[in-house]
Length: 503
Image 1 (tube, rainbow, N blue to C red):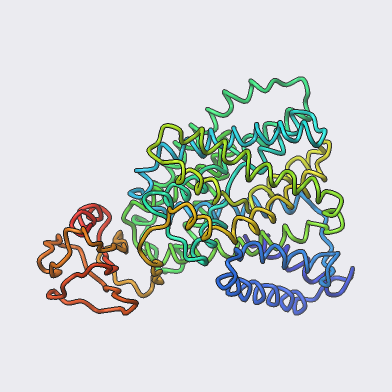
Image 2 (image 1 turned 90 degrees about the vertical axis):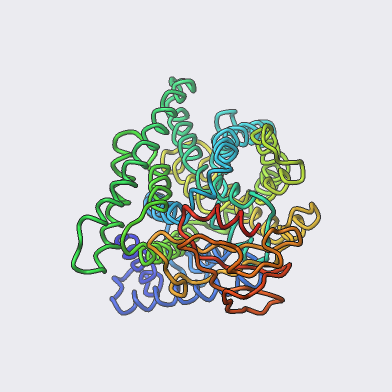
């Protein structure tokens, strides 16, 4: 992480004073400026509905060698290294914030979509690139594999900003798919890049490698998640500030050790985060805040660096191909993969269509595009800029229309926007308590009952009731009415009991 920040600082410094060695003051000035602009951009994204991550990317382009910033960067190796480390920390933070109780109902569908869906998307995009762009079939499938994974951060930053609340288990399904489909995309990209550089290899050799990587990653993620919990509880460090350092080191150890043994490190860190979420460990809330802030810092550093690597002059020649492939992904490959992967689920056509539409692309495809660029694969530079074009097109088209499409399909929940409370304002019942929002409908069993009459178990606290956009501090005698949004704090194992009592 320190190397990432130092490299970004160095690039900023060079951008200000040319080829001379930048001074520390100029480096800090440049970094401070980029961070401040990025934070303001995230504020602007909440108003426009465009993901802050895309704005970070545009900041990098503006600061690049062909923009006013004049920061010269043409080093795919550095970009790849920064992207890998950033993705590791982002995926762990996403897993740490993912509740197993929300994942369990969508586990089968999400897992199928995250793996089979990626394979189908890659195959369909490969056929299009083969027939339209003149690539070989293997080169086309490589391009498809690179853009086959969705981005959870982009999806949910747009959904929160645009006030989208999807019904049923649609949001947990999309979140789980977005967090768990990166490993398959990484595997396919690296495997196909190796086959292109070694034509004597066989594509069937990837099958046992896939099962080995995923199996090892699953075991490693579970074991390391349990071990991290044990280490945090047993070491009893004298300084609270050392616990984030400990978890950071263990996360990097999880990824690197899994990768060295031949497993998929990205899946391992994501699963380790999910395992830790369901465990009880000291300083849980402060550690979750730390990794959430670290994930945002990594997103800013990664997207700005990716923006620096892109040359706008090289985007113009591939604009037509980029738009064509973006359309093929959005209207052909993604819907086919969703409908086939979710064919045996209870989702109806409208729900499958919205799952297809909110499959936004983000940082992962751009990072993956550096692998063939580093290996010297034919058309690698063209593929990199086509991927960049696809990412921008996906966010601008789908990101700004999610609300309208959800309304048109009739898949939005009847409740109003959810309220997201900062961790520091949430009272703590126990180290593993969670905040949950419940909507009292006209058919809820809790309608007309006071809070005392609900018979909630010990360890449950009704924090507030939002009624007609007014927040009420409830007492035991407060009677629930239709339309109330009840904020409940409860331990993990009591969430389903509380949900049944109110819903």
